[in-house]
Image 1 (tube, rainbow, N blue to C red):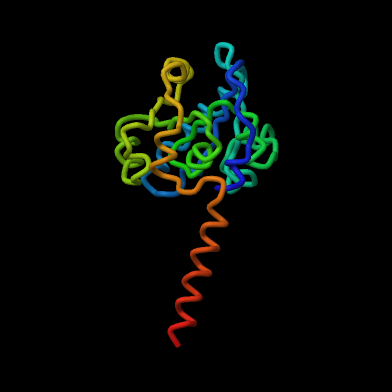
Image 2: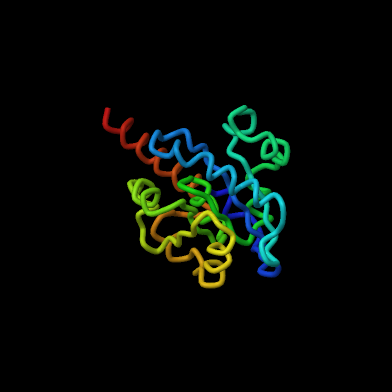
Length: 186
């Protein structure tokens, strides 16, 4: 996550929303939501949401998947994820590690969900079970209603990410210390 901590601060005006897709074929419980999810993503390609600039990003596993609508695959611009997160002031996705990456980059984020049953399944992952994570439904009106009230990610970052910006160095030092203890004990 160190590389995300180095991303420049987000511009607050205009709101730039990065919506990241997640293959809904895995896990099996989410398959039935795929048509609704991709229809929602396609609707975001048509226009920005009430003054909010929107960028849709497919998951790498979706880019060449013929089951994904061709219009989405054609519209996908293959920027590195870091560049898309740097562009964004807000990041949204269904259950996905991209929200943890947004957290590391100090971006305001929220989860996207189809309905209460989807919420219940996604919340089987501890990060998405955290009540501090806002959830919006797959429609433009709900997203625009959520954005103004979103809190910044600082408290979540303290709870979920350690040593942001220096984790590689801290991990290397810990491994070196363990190696020294192991070799000195022989």
